[in-house]
Length: 389
Ligand code: B12
Ligand code: SF4
Image (cartoon, rainbow, N blue to C red; front, side, top):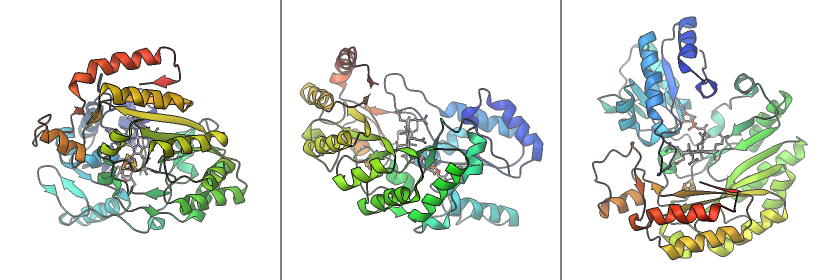
């Protein structure tokens, strides 16, 4: 087995050529994390680069090419067709990929293989969400050391749980990881962190969709880090409610130095339309507690979606400004993902057709506000250098 990290390569082809020549693989897996950058003004569609990787592999090897990853999982059929690979696995790969390898090695029929899509033949088997995540090994420090020679600077991604029980109107996460939260045993997380610390790493990024839910589990993770005496710093993504003072204190004591705080709007009506389950008071309280504990905050605003008006957008900017965040990322227009409430709304309003291929980035924006939003944000940003979009 050989791992090629194309994220760090300037030119993909030599690395692919070298890897394939070195051991003549029987199968090639490609991880497709991002389809595009969700930027409506100047979208970067990233799959043409991936298609080139698929073509290079095809020209150098007869091995079947399998796709997987978060981006792929949102569009299992259309991404497979677009990229012209042989097959793809939707969702988590730990069970499905070995299952596929086993069937292929035995020359058996692939029908029923969990989460598997074959190009031109569609889905072969129902996808699986393993309840007991502890059955899946964590990557370990050896793999990270290969990827990151500069250990002091690198943020090790670490996932403690999968799934998100929230149901935000525009979000594709449920398609990737499902709704129920599935958690790893905290002891195993600490072991993973300790092995990285032993190898010289000290920065971690908890890539859980929401770090603060369920609260008791988050507290346990923090307590275990504190008890372990591991001197680490870390970041995470939090939901702006359900964060009590006890958890914030534990997070700070355990080394949390920054959170992503995606409150997305400063207008209660818009929050309601996005199906957010918090009020502006809760966001303010959460932000205040984080500030008191000296945890840096990167806020997020998502403007131009259903119901947005000049007034609601202004309210959002005033609200975000009042929080005195360390940084703020503003996105104008909302990327439309299949099977979401936003996709339904966009279809009902005739913005997209039911048969449109959403793999190619489409955005929901109140069209009369589009130019005004860009002009207004640019004006606000001119003297707020910690804001970006
Ligand atoms: C954490 C996170 C971030 C963090 C990353 C921190 C870090 N240091 O890694 C931050 C906040 C920085 C971030 C930024 C962005 N993100 Co982000 N992020 C995520 C998130 C929540 C988790 C990703 C993760 O690490 N998962 C854990 C790992 C273990 O899972 P995994 O990679 O999916 O792998 C599993 C399976 O997919 C499968 N698999 C993976 N590869 C393969 C390969 C094969 C062959 C097989 C068989 C299986 C397989 O098996 C694995 C184990 O089960 C996802 C949402 C989600 N829940 O997936 C969004 C997500 C990936 N991000 C997304 C986006 C758009 C972005 C941004 C472009 C946002 C922006 N506008 O700036 C940037 C891009 C950053 C970049 N350079 O890539 C989108 C991508 C969709 C799209 N349109 O392309 C997602 C899906 C969110 C969403 N629902 O819209 N992100
Ligand atoms: S909380 Fe985040 S991950 Fe969960 S549904 Fe909302 S946007 Fe998606």
